[in-house]
Length: 110
Image (cartoon, rainbow, N blue to C red):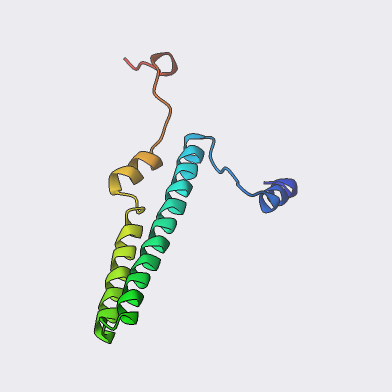
């Protein structure tokens, strides 16, 4: 690779290391899912804290209730974030994305 290519890779926002543009679409979709999951997690955490705070101001919440709700919210947020992890099937599909084989491109061995 020449010096110009390395400089272009350094200055770019996205560098395609493969000619398969389906991976670019996949990454765009994954980015949208990540943003949506982050917003879900933040909203869930804030709502949980607001509910516990409301009970605390009303005199109905104890320290243990706040701790349990905080740990429970943390576990649920972590599990919600884990839905973004690829399954082994999806990893195999994305790693092996190849163009469909056409008969005119194949050599027939007899």
